[in-house]
Length: 307
Image 1 (cartoon, one colour):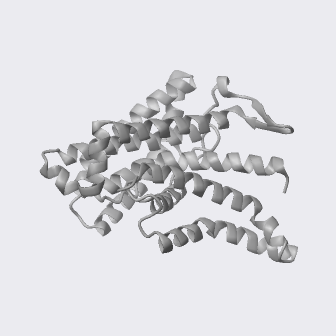
Image 2 (tube, one colour):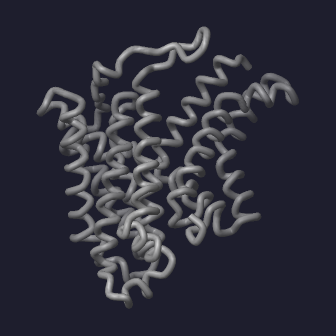
Image 3 (cartoon, rainbow, N blue to C red):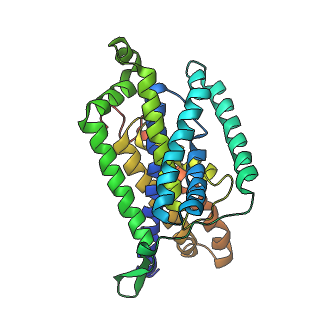
């Protein structure tokens, strides 16, 4: 295990953690404020990537594509909220799960009809192309570093909005006791619509950032949605601070585990056995972590009353 490889995998883990946070932030607020399980939140990540590809075809620039994709993700998210999701708020969780799963299937097929099933790519912005030397012998892509920095900036902005503004106070109060906030005269449905719209933009932003380094394809958000749920369970439902720290932890554990689990297993097992056991253990690490957190902290590391 070389120091260079460890550094690369650590940066990759931070990158994954940032993408998970952008998806989990909106998801945890929606779940925390309205107790609404939205399995379709992952498709907002996918739509952000596809809309960025479409925006690039129109504008010819990455930044123009980002603007179009952010506005498009917001519009699509608000349309889904008005047409479908708001009719599910008073239904039980099983109905919410079934309905939002149906939305996943519909939108995954819709992007195939509109853009085709073949994977697409979004060109990287020229300003952020190339690599930079992080340490002796380690060149790391500038775009990936910019992705991490952009995610950290969004996290800081979101924390300030939730912690320091009146709207953020209402969101935190709604996550703690939505009926009381509604009784005080706050239109909780309008509050939720704003939270939902902002959450879809964050998920879309994650898709935009991921598009130049990952393939854009139908269903690309499904696996990340599962990881996002792991993040909000570990961090504490409704907690932005919890979602941020848990996302970084999950990103690092998953990436470092997949990178080094086999090598560590070889210290205890034969090479052939380690090659079988290592990947299996690596794929389970985040779920083992979640189980451990739930055993000792059933409400998560940073429950909303403290987050």
